Image 1 (tube, rainbow, N blue to C red):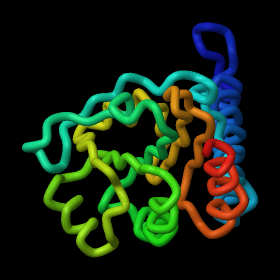
Image 2: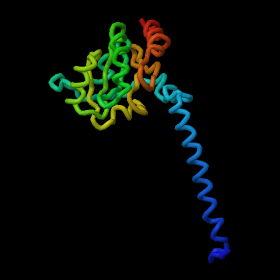
Image 3: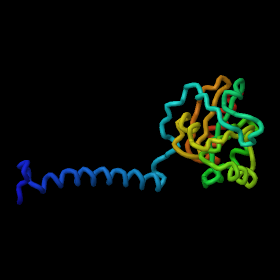
Image 4: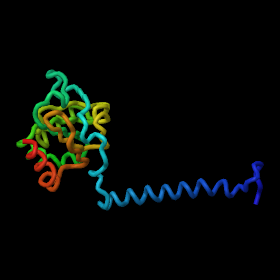
Length: 187
C-alpha cells in the first residue's frame, strides 16, 4: 500500500466516499422501486399548506381578454383548485372525475408550465370543468401553492383556507371516499 503525503493510505480515502455513495444510491433506488410498485402513496406527501390561507396567487387567464384570476376572486364559497397540464397523462385520466365534481363545487384550473394553445387543445379533447383557468407558464403559482407535480388538487373553504391537498390523479376512490364527502360537509 502506498502512503499519501497526508499519511492516510490511498485506499481508505477512496473507499469511504464510495461506500457512502453506494448506501445513498441503494436507499434512493429502493424508494423509487417502492413507488413504482405502488407500495408508497405519493398522494400522501406532506403539505405545509393545510390549515393555512391560500397564497395570493394571481395569474393571467387563459382567455386573456378577461384579465387575471386567482383563488381569492372566488372567496365566499368553497373552491377546488386543480393544477394540471396538457402534457400530463394522469391529468387526462382524472378528467371524468373533474366533470363529476363540477356539479358540486366550483373548480379553478391552473395550467402549470404549459403553452396556452396546448391547454386549449387539452380542454377541447377532455372537457372544461373549470370556472376559470390561470396560466402558470413559469410555475411560480404552483410553487407558491407548494405543488410537487401535476396533477394536484386543493380544497378550499369559503374563507380561502386550504383544507385538503391531493397529489396525483383523482380516481373513483379519491372522488367517492375523500373529495365528495369533504365537499358535502362544506355545503
